[in-house]
Image: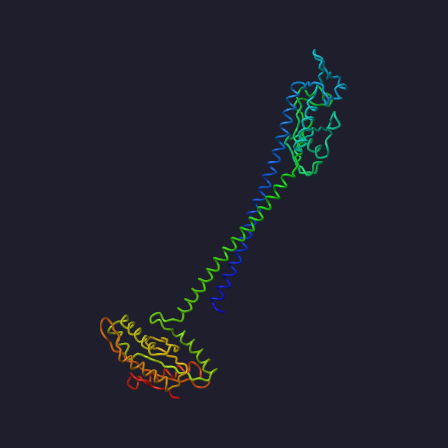
Length: 417
């Protein structure tokens, strides 16, 4: 498995991880928004209940301080049935003949809350552990709350089912004034003690509707956000994957390319030779190689230093490439050694190609530091034998090249067949 494929797999895994992280982050963000919205809405509901409670208790306190409210007796006017038992005069006649009836604080509060419930659905009850009016008897939660209110006086609340449906119930203490003891004197109460409480029940249906709308909106926004962020990540990852693949191709090419001449290096040349050997055996076509080595190259380096030698090597590589066919492979496999791979050519035809290269090199000098420097090359040519290995083929061409040098240089020698 190549490094490029491994890198692409890692990038895909990383991209999937990023997409998952984006989806989870989006879900967490919008989930947090929903929970925060829910908390704020219920806090608003509780604040609303506290306001209703405060208004009722303040109104009741004002009426208590003024000994009740006298109202004209009309149709529908309510009279407190407990005044007679408490021996409190609750009626009066005006000089003009009109009749008045005394409304005590609890009765006024009850009538106000009835109108409030009819208009808004919000119900308010005044409750007590020891009520004079049985209608003010506390239920189980209210009794528990009243006991607690006698100690810390902190309002309490709950979400519970009421006759109006699921509601937020809010209970706050009702503290005795001196005027209260007129009616509650027989109940071991004193000024400042908790004589009861106001329970406000605010329906949560509206809040739940708002939360459902909010949840739907957040769900749609979450899907859009997750989709857009995932698409953006996939787009960026796709571009990045393309760049990574391109970089790997460049790196792969660089790993097989000679930096100086731009030809394939030893590794690249031998890899290509392996491919050509396989192809030659499959097709039954000949394959030859030529090992080319510049003669007396050390003299060039000594006279023109290594930069001059580099110019000579680049010039030599260009001449080999110019004389070779488009499907031949030319590679630099050593300091001044080059390998020519000639598929489809037997030894004699490969030798003829090598001879053309030798003549071209001898005829076309390199220009080094402004001087025209003639070069010469010794070439060894070998044709692939049946079942011969790559190393054996190259070694035979190498031996033939050294034989050319020993025979006087600047010549082509065929390897023994």
